[in-house]
Length: 296
Picture 1: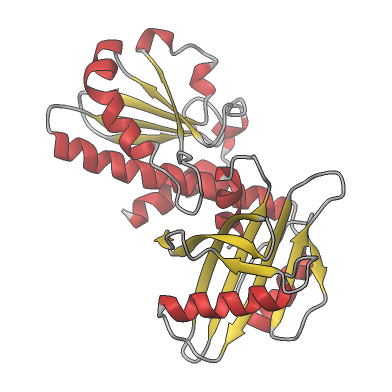
Picture 2 (picture 1 turned 180 degrees about the vertical axis):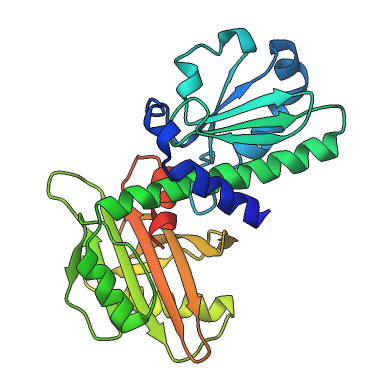
């Protein structure tokens, strides 16, 4: 399955002569357009599809789906809709894929359906992972075009990991064991932080990871009030998802909070932890979480 995903992503994002003549894909990378007969969608498919493709993203206080699902029948699939970046067509034959069928950076999947619910659910779960990875890869490719190469070299030099930091972030002065990047524009309420730090203890225990993260957050991100600092919210469950920890943060002795992602990198003798967090009250957090995934 992993090899298939890699091959599909390579086909989608590599360019050949045929692809140069295709129009640009349309629609959001967080949308998937399903194509099936109306009666089949309404009576048998919609709930199954939504359960899998619209599952909640961990690390967000309020429910937000991984993908927004759109549906049309075969007769409604016109030339404009055919350029959507993510299309899944219900098939009565077999499950297969076509990269860049009608547009650039597009994945069209033909999803086999019969009355075998277990097989259909399994193939939906596989497709979910493929389209999720496609979106993260697309975000990462866009980040590479607008990244700070000096930041990446510094991170590689001091921590021996490869990260892509967008140009919009600034590097803050910190101790040698910590690297801190922040995005805090004066004309917007949004604030984002990325912290990179290392520990000589390469423990995989989640409690150790959380304790280390809290110590660095408390040391680095302080509020305006005395004894005010950022800490992980302990009343919200911490979940592992796609290899990273998802949690919420709060401002101790303050009123701020938001989503947080922790990505551990293990070696034989040390642990590198990368923590990304956002403050943007009242906004959806799905896109921030996916942006952090593409960075980390």
